[in-house]
Image 1 (spheres, rainbow, N blue to C red):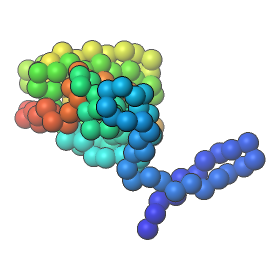
Image 2 (image 1 turned 180 degrees about the horizontal axis):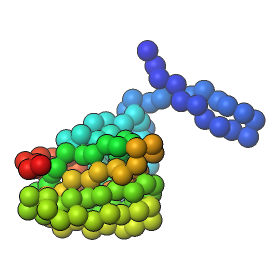
Image 3 (image 1 turned 135 degrees about the vertical axis):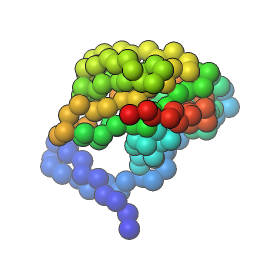
Image 4 (image 1 turned 90 degrees about the horizontal axis):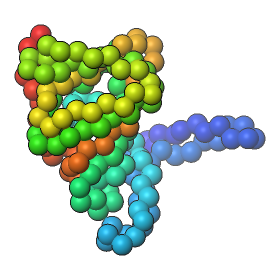
Length: 157
């Protein structure tokens, strides 16, 4: 059964079929501009829905990935590290507590509009502080194989 998305137009509502796979426009040959229109969310190793935009697989990127991550209301990701890779995050919506460091003993709270940097190999775990609204972030990494180097970190709660 196909999922349908409701889109608001100037004339009213429009039903549009949701795409399971992203739509890719352009050649992934390193000479063409590539556009990626996200399909349905996939589940990450971190246990969160994400929409992969730019990666080695989608756009032929050699050194980076770019995606949208959604943390559901009251939800959290699995504690994890990005082995050997930096992460930069722009929090578009919500309030997120990130526990980080050895044993996840440190903590920082970020709000919409914050830019966040996570060095390579730093354990971290995000928590959406709202019980009613999703937190939405744009995440980039200097890793074109976005999920390949994600390692689940033993959470010591």
